[in-house]
Amino acid sequence: MLKKPSNILYTLLFFPIVFSLNLSSLPFIGKFFKSSSPGIPSSKEINLTYWGLFETEDVINPLIEEYRKIHPNIKITYEPKDFSNLKSYKETLQARLKNNTAPDIIRMHSSWVSEFYPYLQPAPNTILNKETYSKEFFPAAENASVSSKGDVYAVPLMYEAIVVFYNQDILAEKGINRLPKTWDDFRELAIALTQKDERGNIIRAGAAIGNAQNIAHSSDILGLMFSQSNLKIPEDLDTQAAAEILNYYTSFFKQDRVWDTWLPYSPVAFAEKKVAIMFAPTWQSFSILNSNPNISIGISAVPQIPIWQSPGITNVNWASFWVEGVTKSSKNSLAAWDFLRFMSQKEQREKLFKQSSRIRPFGNTFGLTDLSETLKNSDYITNVVLGAPFAKGGVIADRVGNDNYVNAIKKAIDDVLDGKTAEAALAEAKKTIQESQKSSQLK
Image 1 (cartoon, one colour):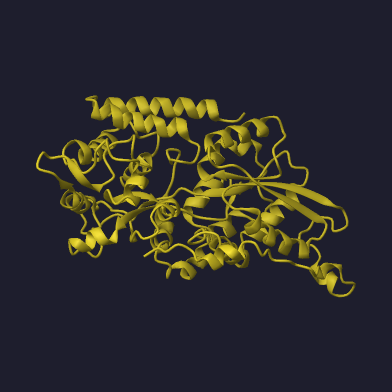
Image 2 (cartoon, rainbow, N blue to C red; image 1 turned 90 degrees about the horizontal axis):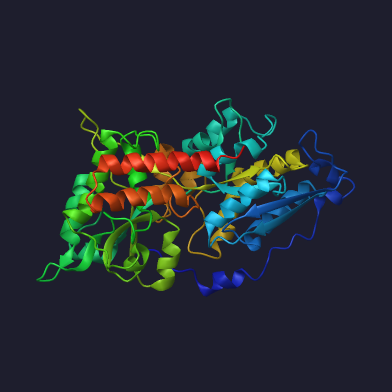
């Protein structure tokens, strides 16, 4: 069960870590802490600006100070941006990149890299190359951040994916200890968990799935289903396979009635115990616990589909995470990449996790393959870590600023519920997404 952090942890937030000794300034010891990166002058003062999201100065600044012990001449100003409207943040970055006024280091969603890359400075091979990247980071990060030529454009300091939230108390009433592994079994469970009155009205929904408007991450759920069928987004949206998936998704609402339009937004409904199961990234648990500290949250792996002519099932997950990159307009891109390489290494990841865990129930999942074992004993993020090597992502990730793409998928869902064929709805969605991608591409 997830629990809120204690008041002691909140108190720790107000006692920043102070690094009073700069070893590099000492006459003898200092020579061992000078810059190890060729081309970065140790005598010239370098100023870097870093735009971040989600993490406060209290989390990032201690790591910056650690870096400055090695590079005392490099000053890094971390500026956390408002994340209440990620679409505006994305548009601001696009404008700043175009007019060469972007900060040196930026946080962006992994799905933005392909749009931003003309204005991003790839990492020097001496700092980070494709071979090293493939060994250290999960495939979803490499697919998003490394070009076909092998240039590295971004590194993830965190990792996140869609998982299944379930109310442990509700499932315990039915004698259920874990969720099914396949979609069809999941569907049966969602129907069984749905409670209705004598008129057929839902008292408690079995699962938040089937429509779009009051379900968080509905486009992510479809993205997961499309990926499990090996469909490319948006290229394969107008195929028969994609249409069948959309029809299957809407059947939870149209035929099975495990969810209804009158219910609150799915994370709110979950917190209020009006739904037994929902799909979301693990960070949604923060607001749920704030609303209802006593709720018993369980987190499980997402359902999979049977493999054709095989007794097994797929093992495909849906990732949605953020990465850090260096802008081409930076006058100190080498130093910026050296800092990001420092931040992406194991020791710093562990510190970042611990720092962020002080101000919320748990820290961000790591994006490094060799840190997975560290996190596997953490109930709420275990399934994120286990699924990371087999995850895919895409532009229809919800709640990341990709509103044009997400709204195209939501409209397709609504259109099918209003009577339009799935084929026609998805063909329109594909056209809308591709046109939006063209207009969003930085040139």
